Length: 106
Image (cartoon, rainbow, N blue to C red; front, side, top):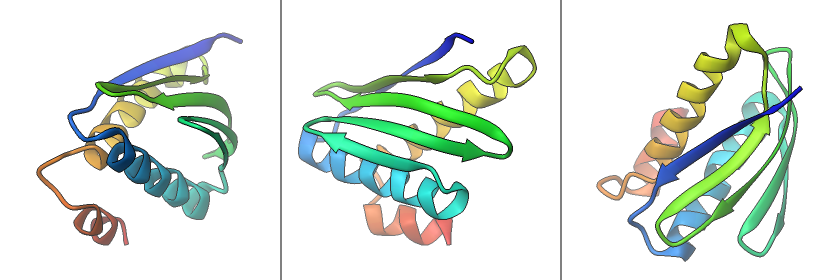
């Protein structure tokens, strides 16, 4: 199966963006059991969410977070794309503190 690509704009400093992406990946780990392995500004993700295998990678760059994940197939592709984009945009929202975002997840 192919890969689902995603790219989300980022206006935060790279270190703050990485901290927020780490928090999002920790949330996915708690909620779905997805694990992440970091190497510099890149992370590899693996696991299963809602019965769908997740295998992907991402990179935190100066102006965006970009990556790809396993394509869940035609029926779920649009939902998966929207979910990824929405969650990354939520965590990279410079108008909200990371603490407020995390509180909203609980």
